[in-house]
Length: 176
Image 1 (cartoon, rainbow, N blue to C red):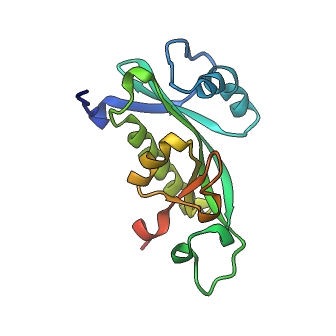
Image 2: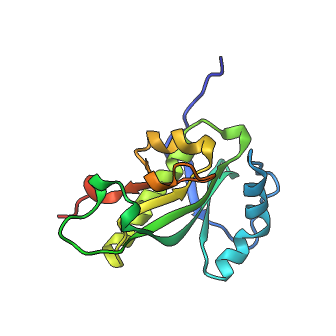
């Protein structure tokens, strides 16, 4: 049995990816995520397509996430989450476009920590431009991870290779 220790969140730091960051030591289980971080993330910054945040533990990059803006068509939301008496075609969302943890640090709470950071950023956005959801095109092996964090599957997309999942900010964080 593998013993899993959680990182105290106060020992983890999150900051934007910089042009001079050395990412050679970070190795994620998914090759496409390694490729994105090392070959495309900085271009996404320059082209304003997404922002990549590094998670750092003791001066070592242990994970990352890339965030961008998106929308979700109202008709594919689960019925209980749809707004009543308001005509809306799509919901504004913050998208977790990429999220990965170094294989040496998996299953230690770092992914959950990054999702909590994304929730904070979405709440910040909702105060200035409106943001109702956090969405992710989940890899099949990450669906349970997101479900534990109260993300829901879009019913229409359950059979897709990367089904869309969402977290509705409003019920948990109603503003005063």
